[in-house]
Image (cartoon, rainbow, N blue to C red; front, top):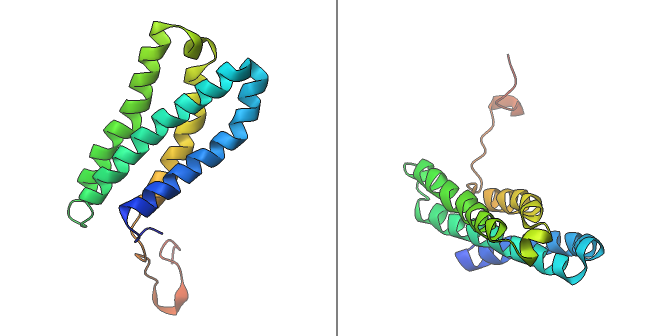
Length: 139
């Protein structure tokens, strides 16, 4: 999956966030009725937007020499987009703030972070020591 194109990786990332929304939506509906479901969807969208932007940046800096740049540049939109937008909507007040937007951001952020990180890891970069012993075994 990691070696696939950006469109496939974006779709996988979107499916991961959608699966999390499928779990959270009934709880949101129970807690705040339709406002909770809308708020959870907005929070999922904010986190997805940040993760997709980070994914694009990570693909731009795929070479081993520039991978650290992609990692650090990806941190800005991955964290900044959802939490900046969440803070703006929270300070503005209204339905999203009342239904717990910041709580839903904290729920969806780790899901998007995990999926985006897995998709950015290099494929097949595993090497083993002679004899099949893992590299982290102390000798």
